Amino acid sequence: MKYQQILEAIRALPEQDRKKIIDELTGGTIKHDYISTRREKLLNRQVGCPHCKSLKFYRYGHDKGCSRFMCKDCKRTFTEFTGTWVSGLHKKELVNDYLDLMDQQKSLDKIKVALKINKKTAFDWRHKILSSLVGAKTEDFEGIVESDETFFRYSQKGNKKLQDKGRKRGSGYSKRGSPKDKVAVIVTADRKGSMDLSVASIGGIDRHDIENAIGYRISKDAIICSDGSTSYKSFASENELQLVVLRADLKQFVKQKIYHIQNVNSLHNNLKKWIDSTFWGVSTKYLQNYLYWFKLQQICKKSTCAIQDIVNDSLEDLYARYHFRHINDRYQRLIATLI
Image (tube, rainbow, N blue to C red; front, top):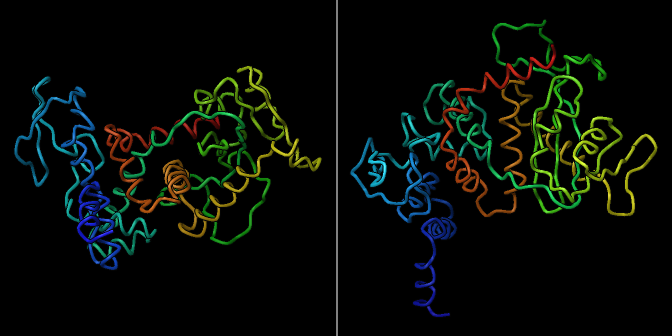
């Protein structure tokens, strides 16, 4: 292929792909502009007005450095970030650098120093982004579906007013524990790559917890593989689903060479290693946000730019600020499961 043909082929690519090629050729000296994809989608009419979804809008100047638009149908103005987690942020010029550091999984202290921002700002930006992933990659489960629960110790990390006596890091505790010591996380995955990780309750789970987590996403012809928990039996019976029970205590790990929960067990192990080694544990209040992050990392791990894919998904949520403001409400509903 001649030079001119290569040049024309590159010019025909989307802007984001052209930037990736430049980045590769220059050894990564070109900074990414992750959040510009929202503006590109608006200009290409791939997304509509955030107020009425209409595609009939035109450019209407700028607002604090952001492109501004006027909708012809609802007569309202909006910017490229209206409704997204970027809306309302001060120092937007630091967002792309912040996303690079987040992709490298740098601690909040290191981000604070690198960007010269307050640690609380770094913390809030992280959870504004993660809160906006609530609806990302929520495809239905089909075929053979593996589902099982795992447990995390209840944590009040970061809370200045502890409800219980603090525990020194590294000190031992009973693995069995009492119900209030454990937070149940339901992990579900099918063989085509759909995945869900949901904080279900404090203590053991029941049929309603499974229903709330994945009930609306299970197709009627799916086959669920799980352990011998009566909760899954009740859930499968209620929804008229086929259930394959695998009991580790009876050394039932695989049935008919295709039914197992090894993929979900692997996710359990990887999730716990990631939480413990990267963050040294996380607060129960924010655990669900980290589950969103982990899920997207798993789904996008073969991507050439996983953080760009995650950012693209986060910018699709036009209720991001609402989800961020209601993190505490979600937490209060969780601790109410103890009552």
